[in-house]
Structure formats: structure tokens, C-alpha cells
Image (cartoon, rainbow, N blue to C red):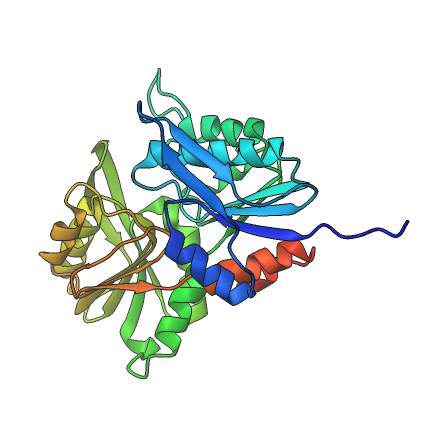
Length: 316
């Protein structure tokens, strides 16, 4: 009997259905049928509406707010597909929650990023696709293949396709030492200089800028980071840059978590523009914010994974 390649099935969790719809449109595939509900006590109830036996299943689910609900739903979905005899289960997590808990910062801290990796693997995931992990070492937490995509091509297209963009006027700024590699790659692609902010964190969600390394005087600066959460550190970074003579400040981040008053904090700040992608869903953001679509990048990565082609070529 000749070998018949398993059919691909594409499903969306409830965290970011708009992104999943756009990905499905790019890949020219129909979203699979799945029913979601809650039992009286709040437990998640799922039912797959079509056969997946022997099929290669892809699931899109960001583990953003509400983090624990979205994570639990993803685990239940994986378990349901595994028990329904899917051939493989690839999970696409545009925003990987708990990623910032990747080490023991203090004596008795958990390493929650590793715990989440274990949960996903034990539930039955075959492969993981995510975007801009907060720390690259999280890839080593998984015992299954993981593709960590980079969002910088989306921001690169935004600036290079903007007729007002002049490389001589800009400087890319890394908001901390840990993000230098990410920011340097973006600066090299834009062909602009790089500056670095030296900061320390006296406690969680609080950052103090100690020094600015690089020349930002009379420059249009782009603060380039992976996550904007409460935005306290970003606003503090903007104040430090203005004190060094920066002409204007824009911010770019793959993941706009924007919790704890982050939206108001940014809107009231001197930051001119905030660019984020739709890895985390938002509606009715202030005019200062602009959401860039990452669905084509994710869709192309899924196609390449499906065809066993290189994914890294998308970022060269």
C-alpha cells in the first residue's frame, strides 16, 4: 500500500482567534471545529467537532491574560487531540506566558518557564512554535523540537517602507544589557547605530536606569524590546534618553502585554509612538499605539514546518 501523507488540521484556542483567522487565511486553510464551554464550577469543557485521527494538528493559543485559563485550555486541547489519535500536535504559542520566570533570581524561587515546558510536553505536544522568547535558554527547557521565531522582520518592514525613515537620524536602543543581541540585529538590518541602557531592578516590575551607553543626542531613538508589560521601565528609559538629548522616542515590542496600567502610563509619557504585534490581542488602544500583523510570518513558518523546510531562512 502506498504511503499517504497525513492531512493537516488547524485549530484555534480562545485567547487570540483573530490572529488564528488571519493565519488560516494566509495558509488558505479552514479553521477546525471545536466547541468550548464551562461546567458549573468553572472547569473548562472542550469537544472536537471533526475527526483528527492520523492527522497533523496545529493549535494556535497565546498564554496571555488570563494566563492560567489560557494555559489550562491549551493543555486540555493537547490532551483531547492526543486521545483522539492525532498523528502529531504542533502548538503555536505566539506569546509564551511565564517566560520571565526562567531562573532562580532568589534562593527559593520557582523556574516556572521550565514547569510550563514540562506540562506542554507531558500533555502530548509534538512540537512548539513561539515568538521572541524572553530568554533564549528557554528553548533548552523543552525535550521536543521548538522554533523560536523573531518578530523583527515585521518592524523592519514598517520602517523600511516608511518614506520618512532616514537611517542617519535614528538610533536603536536596547532597554537593558540582556536585550542587546536582539536590538543589535534590528539595528544592523536598519543600518543604524546601537545604544544600550544600563539598568538595575531593585524589585519586580521596577527598573532604574543607571547609564546610557552610546550617543543619542539629537537622534530619533527606537527602544526595541520583546515585551511591554507595566511599561514602568520603558517610561523610565524614555526619561533617561530625553535627559541625554534624544530628539524623539518610539518603542517597538513583539508582545504588548500592557498590564497594571501600562496603557495609561505609555499614553501619558513622552514616547511618540508604540509599535506592538498581535501576538497578544488588544482592541480600542489609544492613537499612540499601532498594532502590526504577525500572521503572515507565523503562517509562513507553519507552512515551512509542515513541508520540512528551513524556518531560520525567514530571518536572514
